Amino acid sequence: MSDKHEAKAKRFLIKNGYTGIYYPGECGCYIGDLMPCLALDFDEATGIPLGCKPGYKHEQGSDWIVSNNKEPPSADDFQRIIDEC
Image (cartoon, rainbow, N blue to C red; front, side, top):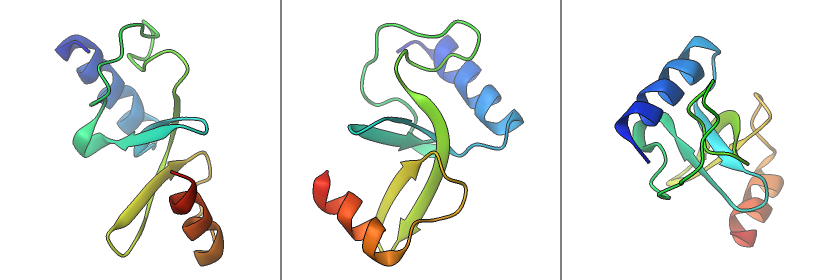
């Protein structure tokens, strides 16, 4: 990941009200620790790695997830997601 892509992705996310990105069924990251995965291919318009989608960070205790839903999941759904990771 280049600094150029990270900066572009942060601008895109903030401008559009998102707080992170996620790769469906795999992983997620948030603006404060964006793209630690060493992605190689990016959407040039947004700076986001190909396959990743913008989303929203949700926290519960010390755990967190990023999803496509602005509203946080129920406690049971949150725990299920954490358990699947």
